[in-house]
Length: 175
Picture 1: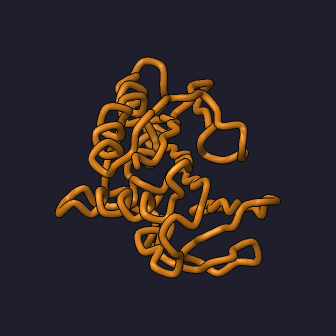
Picture 2: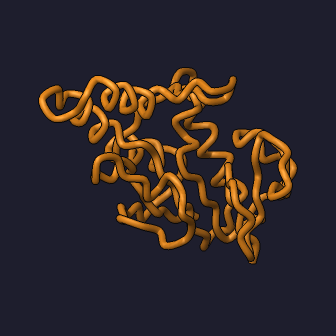
């Protein structure tokens, strides 16, 4: 059973890594929106943490990405997806009494990306409701929010000031 970690940073046994940058742990260099190098129904699991927000919601670009991920997912496969939760981040940003200006600046960067390179820009703000809407439109079902996937130590489990900032969901490919 093949499993694909989109945007992975660490080599993990049993997972192939796809990333836009070539690094030793990367098995496949490419854009997460174009999985044409993989046959349909190639993977039993796809994992992506803090990747979807890099795709524009305009002109259905984000929806097309999810449809492409669904295409390569086996009919009984699972999508594990984590996004920075815009609801949580927006609430944190408004905590002027509790957070310093520097802390609020970091929250703003979690919303819009760190802008450390040309791919570190967030083009879409998502919360659970929006993510569910996109997953449904792309042909996923059985969407479930989870606290932790128990798979990787990455942004899906990141907390800021003790608050988890991610919305983590599993979804199944609708036949």
